[in-house]
Length: 430
Image (cartoon, rainbow, N blue to C red; front, side, top):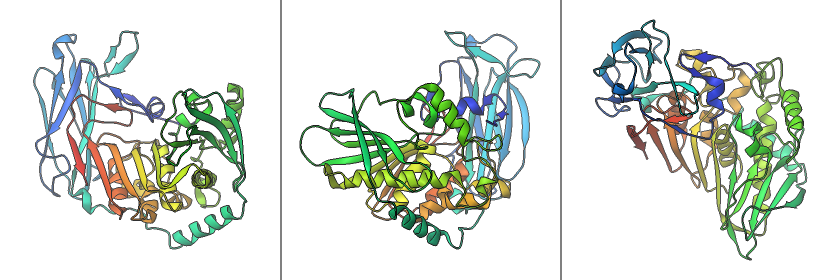
């Protein structure tokens, strides 16, 4: 699978943390701005102050190496002594985000690594940012003219496949709850598969449908039964890929290879993504929709409370569900991946865990999907990192702005896709 690395942080390692969070141990780098990081105007000075916490524990000769990039395409670099705070002043000449990355380096300028108790070495870094007029941001690529017609057609194609479910009861990790492997007929190349849990006590229950991140969708938590299930709700964990569940590791290795194209991981092949009908996301979206439809058909559902959840790629799937399946009442997501993928065409700062933009991807992009979420569904984004360039904040802000339903988002300074520093600046929009 193709992947690259930016300074001090491996993208392939970051994706392994798509649905987890790593918290810093000392030493670490604290970063703040002189006002709310999202409150700047275009052209206004932004002042960052970075302080190395626990500097007394570090070996002599280290320095702080920093790089400023941004949606204006400008770049600045510098170094500083770690004994006193580093102050960086900058600004933006257009609505967008500034990214400030800093890490501890040796006297030779090479990144320094700190070993943990197990001997694993990791960078000591700050990755954060600030924004100028973020509520004025607009998506780079327009919503396709046939966007709603495309999804109406896809819904009709799914509806033409009768919904039949095969349930296999397996051992439940939680007393009083039954657990099943479920496979549901679906449009596309594979069924919608997942783990379904149902409380044993008679009654009507709220329902939750959950989804996995990109690499997590191939991991043990996606292929094996859950270790805990709720006692007060229907719960379905949907496989992104429609594979069989509980199989041997070799099956999943071979399966993953089978859906890779031209050296790219799933959904990254530009040739596949040229048209919406050939995107890997097409089958994935059908499986999402069918899984939610099946939960709605269960007699144990209370008919009114239906939540979709997920982080990163799981957020993308949850938003498809909220937008495309009537009756979803809440979407609880975090680090939402795949927002404004076309932003790379306008020089906006993106990391490189993104498919290269192709026209077919616009139909699945969250900035467009957000427009279809009904006002009857509430969307809460519990974490969006100002240093997350797997789910870049610029695209997340645009997606959030395109939502017309009740909504909230929590922005976290210094947070990347899989890391949150201690006591970060936080900003909540409601």
